[in-house]
Length: 275
Image (cartoon, rainbow, N blue to C red; front, side, top):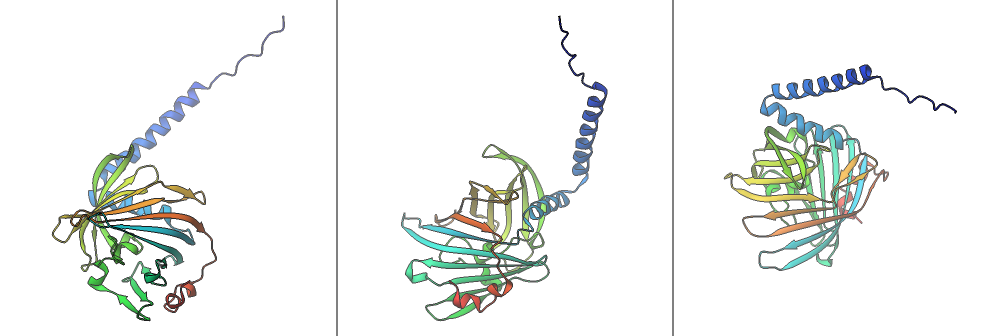
């Protein structure tokens, strides 16, 4: 009778050693996290989320906006969003309204910086001119929505100070919870509480508190999809205002990267001829 070849034997010594190494690494990381102050831990989480999103180059998307009033009335809008990483310290974004006709051609241009105040300009075709959004004006509502102008800029790490609150489960996902406090004294918010999932550091929910420290709005994001093997974008975002009962929903589609955008396409002349 032909003998069967012996089964391969596991090197239990090597396997045990590997498991001990992995356990030691995990324990060391956990101990290092515990040594951080709540402020340092909150900043660490914010930086990790930022670094995972940086380096996309440029992106574009079509967005459907639905505005709901407290009494049930609804209004619909269609817009496009373009963004460009000009450098490590500057990002530019352009929002262009396509419908309905009364807002068609309206455009918002944002220049975000890591070392200086953001610049924003709103172009209104009805008056044939643009106006700069600055200071306290950035806390106002954008085009009648529940999103403020300051919500539409790039949320840079340097725009906030942070505190680590703890961990929570949201939508069956383990999340980090951090508080972030705007460094801009003209912000309409005293603080924000953000939930980021522990696996990908994606924002799942944000509670916004007004200057009186009362809950003002809640942002939720869902339907995340990954692009280019790295960058996550939600399919749907909703901002609900607890104080006036209104809400705004954004639904994203046709998201693309590497569109060949240039900085010139995001200068102040671009918003007057946005198409």
